[in-house]
Image 1: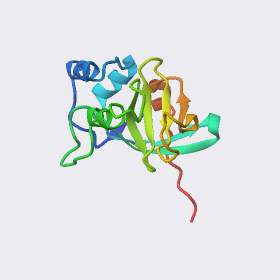
Image 2: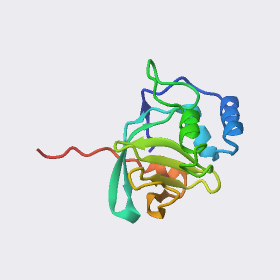
Image 3: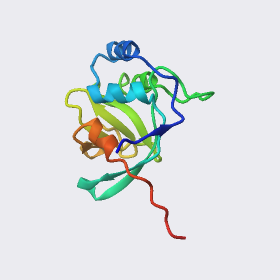
Image 4: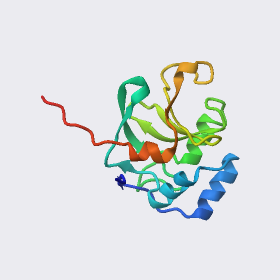
Length: 155
C-alpha cells in the first residue's frame, strides 16, 4: 500500500532533480527520485517507522523538500540541509538528509548503496561516533512502504 503525503511543497521535475544531483555531486536512487516527483517533501499520513534491528519505533516529522519551501515556511530545502550538514563535514558527503523525526534526528539516503540511515544528532559528531549513524532500511522504497499509522495511546 502506497503511503500518501500532505502539505507538500511545489512539484519538481526530473530536470530539477538532476540539477540538485549535480550540486551535491551524486545520484539519487531511482525510487527516491520517483517519490520526490510525486511528493516533494511533506508529511506522510503514516508517519511511524519500526526500526526492527533496534526494537523501537520513530515517527517522522516531515520530509525535506527539494528546491521549494513549503507555503509561507522558511524551513530548509534539501540543498540547504546539504550545505549545513554535509559541506561543513558533519555528515559524510554520500549521506543526504531527506527527513527528520520529532527529536531533530535525520533520516538519510546513502548515495552509494541506496540504504536508509537514521542519524542521531544528540549523540555527538556523527562521524566521530559510530553509534550515531544506524542503518534502518535496505532502500528508500522499503522505508516508505513500511511506514505505519501512529497508534492512539490509551489515556
